[in-house]
Every structure is written in structure tokens, then in C-alpha cells.
Length: 169
Image 1 (cartoon, one colour):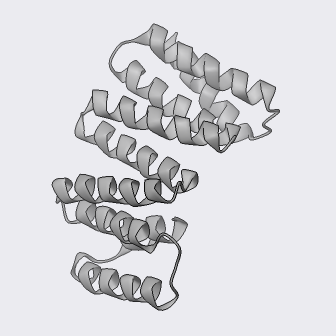
Image 2 (cartoon, helix red, strand yellow; image 1 turned 135 degrees about the horizontal axis):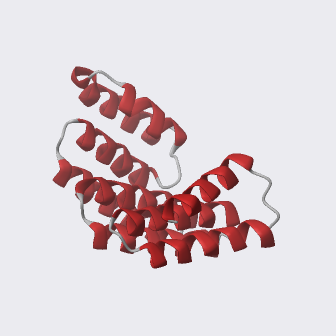
């Protein structure tokens, strides 16, 4: 996931097709688990780079479907959160909140408080940008509770949370 997120966005546009082909070949050669999900995720990133937003979302949905078949909750978290980010960027507020909530469900299944906090902050941002300050604060308070209950020491995360709370007020 980290490789896909860092490599494909940094490619020159004229190199994307050959990089996709090479990446798919590597996944096949080494018989990577959930290779289809990774292929669709990479295609979605490349679709976004090429401004083919329909391809981006369609490939993300296929990646989600593949990850769901193997119950890979981490990949589902990644793909739903990426879909939420994309939908936020596209102005699809309802879709973004729904995708982020699905990502939160996966983070909860993984029992990963850090990932849950990240999602709460993302949902809060959507509500804040749309003037729903009470709802925004609800998610920030939920994130703050997760940090306290799980004794998360990530100062950058706390700073983001406190900044967002102040911004709401």
C-alpha cells in the first residue's frame, strides 16, 4: 500500500501505463496475496493522476470488492479511507462520510485506535467545512476519547486534534 501510494503519484504521466504493466507482472510473478485488490488500487491511483475520476472510483470499488472477499480488514480500511478522501475532494460529502464510516468500521474490527482517530478527524473536517460544528466536535471528542483510553503518545495527532477543536470554536 505504501509503495503504491508513493510510487504511482510521483511518476511522469507518460510512464504510468508501463509502470502499471510492470507492477501487475511483479504481483503475478510472486503470487502476492490479494494481488487483484492491489492491481485495482494502483489503477485507481493512476486513474486519478490521469484525471479519469470515473476510473479512479470504479477501480477503488473493485479493490474493495476483492479485499472484502478475503476479509482483509486493513486493505478495506485503506481503500475506504482513500475513497472517502477522493469523494471529499470531488465534493461528494455524503459519499465521503459514508466511505469514512466504513473505514472506521474496519479500523474498529482491527482494534486500531490510531486508525480510528484518523478517520474521526477526517469526518470532523467534512462536517466543519459544511458548517456543522456540533457534529464536527462530536467526532473530535470521540477521537480525543480514543487517544486517552488507548494512551496514544502520537504528539502530531494530538496537535491536529487540538487545532481542529480550536478551529471549530
